[in-house]
Length: 146
Image (cartoon, rainbow, N blue to C red; front, side, top):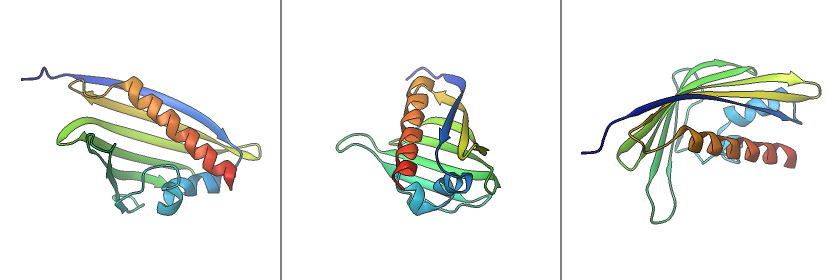
């Protein structure tokens, strides 16, 4: 039997984008806009209590399942959601995320805070934080290309 463990970690990532806050918020709130920088969702219901889910992974590799539930939405300003991440049939983490969007000059400051529990050594806070940096960089690329 594998040894059980639960590692708790919080990380905060801040980005400034050269786009208006409404556009940055829409990149999270609209399924087509979000699919440009995040995996396309099989289910996307952007409302309090609504769910977002994706499944995928590398060819021949494990299948990752992301299942989120929106806990609070303040239009144009804040999104709070919880999500679990499974690798095949194994739960590897559960997180609470807050995305804050605020004006910054002619652009937008985004503050992403994730509080997670990483289970049984299947994932790590460092891996998750790096992956999130990469996603937020991709979001910036999409916003710049518009």
